Length: 333
Image (cartoon, rainbow, N blue to C red; front, side, top):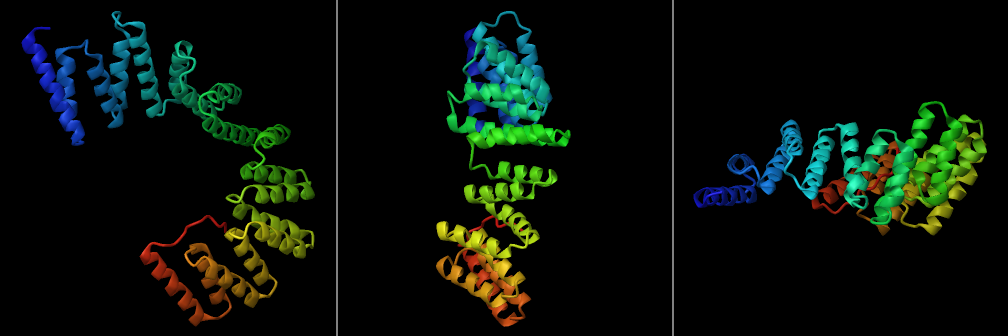
């Protein structure tokens, strides 16, 4: 490349960089296109332009650029690997899961320890329902990212179980969930699914046991499980045991507001609205910024005919919302 051409390319590079810093993507794109047209051997600019296309949603243009690049015979091995990885990312971003997986697999042949490729393949294996492949890749991913691999394995096993259930393979789904729980005993989603399977098998006692264990092990999932547990106890004529269960949780986890609300609702169903309101009011005194508790208190006050007190409760709720000091938390239905 002669000096004048090199100077033009350098100037275009500076201008594209300035545009990118200012998030002026059309201008950055224009200058990158000029660089690529002037010097097709500048692979950094080539990849930058293709990535810009991808980020702007022009997936087809990015794919064509990388496919054209891979047709060249002058690429070194590492340059070809870079192009393959970029093409896989293009397909991935465009939602072409099968083609993306095939691309990542090709990259994995030469980069068997690439954590990004492993993680993407694990995710795509779940989407494509290639669960055995995904689970084998999780073992390799765990050497580089233990937490990420554990989270991915849970998602894979839950998806595999759901797929088996959808296909009518209840025994297979039950086995997969038990495999999940042997390793991840605190997975509330797995306990919830297992309980549902037990119900369908007519094993109500086992279903209750699964849901109880899920609520005890996973506080975040517990609010979803409390209504199931309550219905199960009620069907068995053991509502007192449900109350005892909730109070046991609150003794161990005083900040479990889902359990507090579940207890209040149970008291209301038993005709003890005053006790429910008192329970919620005491909890709000301890944690006045919790939205779920305040909402439930207002609901129970209204249901009990205490409109004035309910208005006061909701006024306090609105004040807290305006101040932005409320704590939001999933509390179930």
